[in-house]
Length: 357
Image 1 (cartoon, one colour):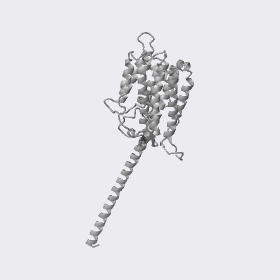
Image 2 (cartoon, helix red, strand yellow):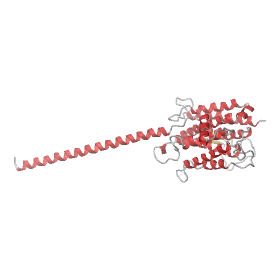
Image 3 (cartoon, rainbow, N blue to C red):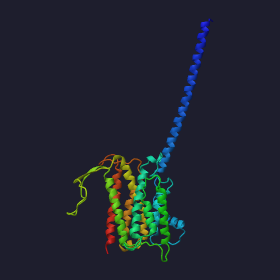
Image 4 (cartoon, helix red, strand yellow):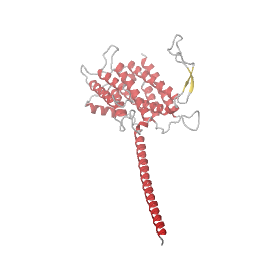
């Protein structure tokens, strides 16, 4: 073989070696990329499963369990008037928000929970009911008259529960809500003391009527928001019933009411949260206001309201549909609004019944 042939053969062998190295390097990079893709896919799958678990709502409130746990936690034996109602209110924050298995979600800043808007809407619905209820407890149920002194522990709980629910730190909602729950525990402990200086809870018809009026206002607002998911024009009746009434800002006679498309599921789950919290509190009212309800022959009226709200807890749709008319797809907001409107109407009637002599 000539010298030129040998040189060509050596050159060819070098080229083959370079091609082999390139193939091996490419194969190594390909295998590495596959591992990265598989790891990323596994991580996304785990995050999805975790997100689905975090979106699970707590079970409906069992009043007997709530009372038993409260008596065990506070190491008390007596169950006095108002204990069931206040213990259930505390349960909304303790087990419904802060200490549920998944923890408090609304102020999370890291994935995947930062993307969960349904459960955060549910949590805010529970919080809205807890806030209005603790105000009723502060202003009416724990005071014999408007000039009586407020219960300091209830004042502290009310103040702490009104902390911004989305604040991440300084202060964190979890810490403030927990401290408020502990303050309500102090009130519960005082409530069981029968001697002078103990806490008070006044189960009167006028107090209960005001509570139902508060809940009716909340249900009415939520009903309007659910109805707005479809988008419609409505007549402005803000000043109806008073010919001398005025308002600070002029408004059109016909209002275009429409919830943002991306917010319809948030409103739906907020309504579910409110209904979940109300169900527990209404069942507690059946216990603590039993004599009042019997005196007004209102037990069945309250049970009808509870039955209506239980309809809101029948399953949780993965996708909230808001179809128009009697089409193929359902309108979940319309169905939710149906149950809440019935409950609101029942609350208004019950409030009027309780006010009668």
